[in-house]
Image 1 (cartoon, rainbow, N blue to C red):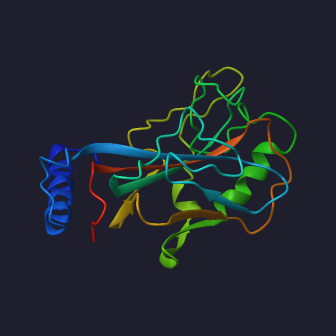
Image 2 (image 1 turned 180 degrees about the vertical axis):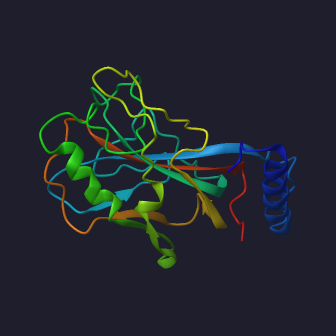
Amino acid sequence: MLNQNPATARLGYEYAKKVVQDAGYSDVDSILTQSDLILERQLVTTSNIYEFPVLDTQQGASGPAFNTERRLKLQDAFIGSSIGMFPEKPTSAVDTTFIPQTYPNDQVFASANTATSLNTVYNGYINISMNGTILVPFWSCQKHRHVPQTQQSATVTAAQVDLDFDGFVSLEPNIIFQGTKNMIVQLILPAGLVAVETFERWRIHYRGYLAQNCTILK
């Protein structure tokens, strides 16, 4: 994870710098910095396959990008070094006050069967392809189910969760997202969800390094 200690962060940066330089770019000119790629899709009961648009110009089945997403620009590249997955319950399509959850919190997903139904997602997986080539065929969502020791309840107002690392897993080898490539991220569930909350979403959150105006990384 990027923020657990400075030495790990430095090693990640040095690797990202090498990737940029091997492609013929300068890490200075590309303004190489730590950054995030945040992708979201609204969950429904009518599908078990969700495609997460990567580019900020793409429109998916949920419509335009949500205001809490952070997608990739066409001219940029992103070197992902860790990944997190989180169910979310905004109160509207433009809500900015919700907190990503690391497990099916029944105090948040309180409507009938919605918390239980979310367990289906953790039996699913994601895959990533680039220009039709499968880069990651199977990444289990179970890696990201984190139930804390102290959970939210009628008397406890918040679960004991640290989003610096809870729900995140190191991504090795790193995945390079390129704006000019046809990058497709899919979430595939074994079955459709039985019940969902209104505006309920799933978030895929990559942490890593952004290289601006770099589109030919390998």
